[in-house]
Length: 178
Image (cartoon, rainbow, N blue to C red):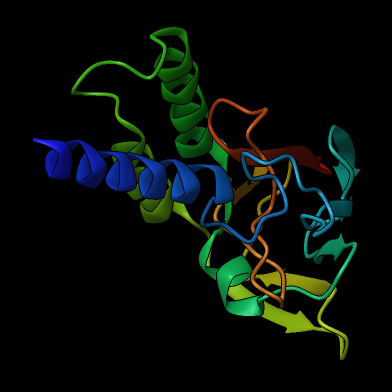
């Protein structure tokens, strides 16, 4: 009986140590160690809410540190027009339901936005902290959305901190000129 109590004590202690130590490199683990900074978006162009943006404008994103470019490209979405508005309406419903429900789960939302993504090309600066996205096509007098999902990370593997957002992403909107 004494061996079982000692064994259980060791197991509980080990589990507690792993829990407290955390497993992530995002600098925001349970210990509160913020010595490893999470990357942040410094600037996006066109700015959120911009109007009369010329057709063919490149999208620029500036981060505060070098990024894992593949993670950014895999979690960047650009969409516009009616399809984008339908997606936004559904996202709002998803958030109002507290993320509950079989029809409106976030996997479904991400598959949907992937299907309406406007393809284009990325061009990165040498340091990897800024990129241009050159969209394939844009239409006049159209609302567009830039959506950056929360699964992006820095070149060093630190995850972007977006836990304050329900949908774990950043969204920017602009409208093209007529």
